[in-house]
Image (cartoon, rainbow, N blue to C red; front, side, top):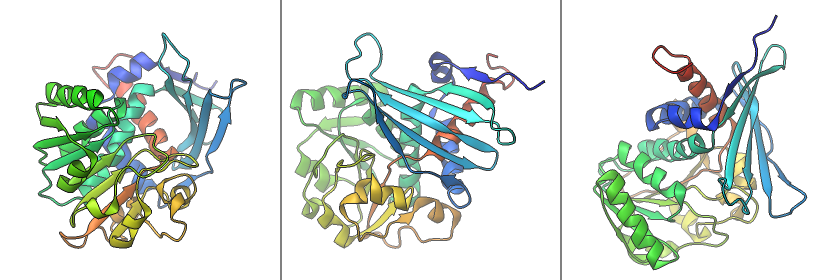
Length: 310
């Protein structure tokens, strides 16, 4: 007889995940891009057109499966976002595990940013500017501050009240000094700049970016989304998670002639990362299935580790 499929509920995966687990899973996923496979993202909608979902699938080693990410904006007593990872048995194709991972998905996304910052940002980076004040932005601050000696966080938001509230929340939760600023002040002062929005047009002027800045764009994961000005690419070295996907649904869909380097190649030592302190580096994270598969596997391992709840 075959083993019964494993199941981790949202509450269980949220209790198991942390920044260390997410970063380790992200590192495994980016290294796996050298030999693993990913497939085109499928975008779907329910009978109500405002409700949408995406399917990202892939395989690497003994991991095979798909992540379903959904957004139901009308939810009132339930989260609007959800994430479900389905793992298949690589030998039989039968269901191996189902992991609900909405909370863990925020850690997974931030871990990709932390990995990019760790590889590409200047070692002395201390000022982090975040454009965006939503749920994901706090995860980005926490993850980046684990890999660089960040001592100041500048917050840029569309609404001044939201920026003030988010800055106060950052300080309360992380102990870091945080303050709201306008876009030009935030971009000009940044050693590391993170964009975490749902924007469909550039958030700032390319001329505001100082030499030596690292930029992680986390928001573009579908057709039409855009956070960065294309003029920036003339003076920057470009990196991404998956080249073809980045050019299709990521930030570089707006720069079809761009030739970004995959971060996994830099991590593996087969491509160069930052080459000087004056270089501007840009990382586009569109999110890919191997991140979800390695995250699910890590959560399942932790769930059965000695001392963890079975």
